[in-house]
Image (cartoon, rainbow, N blue to C red):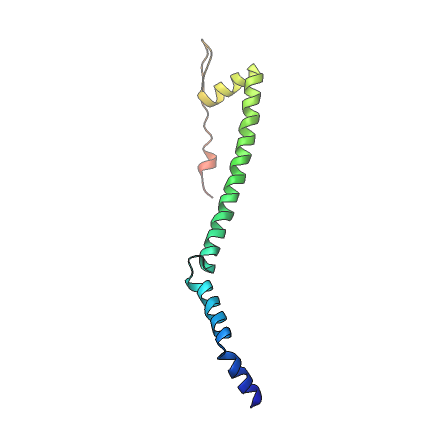
Length: 104
């Protein structure tokens, strides 16, 4: 019986009730509650993955740009492949691979 009285006194203590109310407020009702923080953290993780992808693409494009600027054969190859450019008196045949579009 003395244990129950002790627990009851702790539960009705004004400092304990204030602390519990503060914790409940911070978890559920505050503008920066746990649910909102979780959503923001997920969005941040997604943006960091996107950032890594774009940094890799920038590195690849920088290497390609450097190769094109320094080597005229690379420039010609790039122009022929990307923009379908051709020399005079030359025929151009475009082969399109359609096997990648098929779904098994």
